[in-house]
Image 1 (cartoon, rainbow, N blue to C red):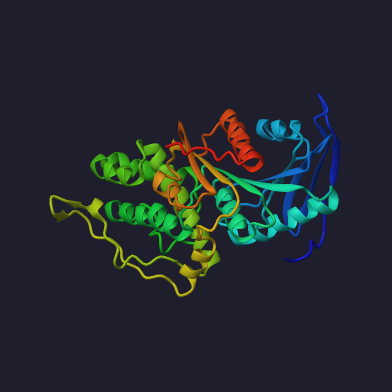
Image 2: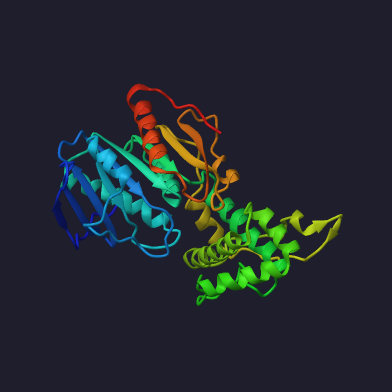
Length: 356
């Protein structure tokens, strides 16, 4: 791993209120921003939070609140660090280095942790899983919120590419085809509005797409389609082209009473692009430290087929759900409770029960 080249910004603030934080440190390591909240009496546990997908690299305001979950952890004596990645988009490859670099920086700047726990949200949960599978000797536990455990290729193929292929077949020319998205494409309100108008003009076809996406209303579906399309655009740029081949894919949603109601666009993957996406990342099932995944029962961005994919035979993985709807709709209380369950698992061997 590369040694950190520079810390561009470093700001230390005095803690306010009850004195739960000794200091807050913000900075940038090789283009990746970070923020560290150091407790007054550190118990040796470092929790590194890994954020989800964003089109731009994260920045941190040293004066902004670190959030209720983070404050709870710091109050309990844990150091809490927020990791940024030096690239936006599906930045799993970049994040694997960025998080390792931040871990080393915490040891150099604050002290060597007794244990390091990774806590990821959405894409950050996949990054946490990848790091734990690859470097079990460096990390002692993981916690993921609203994150898939399926291979990234399968997630994007089924959840984004195939969905947009169905939409393109039923609503041609409303959006660019998912294998050929212009570099100028922008996921703005105008584009979302045009998709909503198309869905409302043909509610019968709209129902087909909604069922394929497990979304109940046209507005949510329009936003999801546009955001997925922009994610595929970014992914094609970093992978070197379209990673997906659908020449043998069946689309039963487009068949009614044995009759095809629309023909689908058929494309092949660009050489090398599929391999990139499979590398970043395909879970191996090789966890050797505790990992707890907490999802909501109805998530349009990360549906159940994407969260229930990790091998159940692995003792070190536990999947739980809370009865909520919406992406990352896990509130503070269940997040704190999940961390306590993970802590009991690491400290006492109390493996949490599966909740479905």
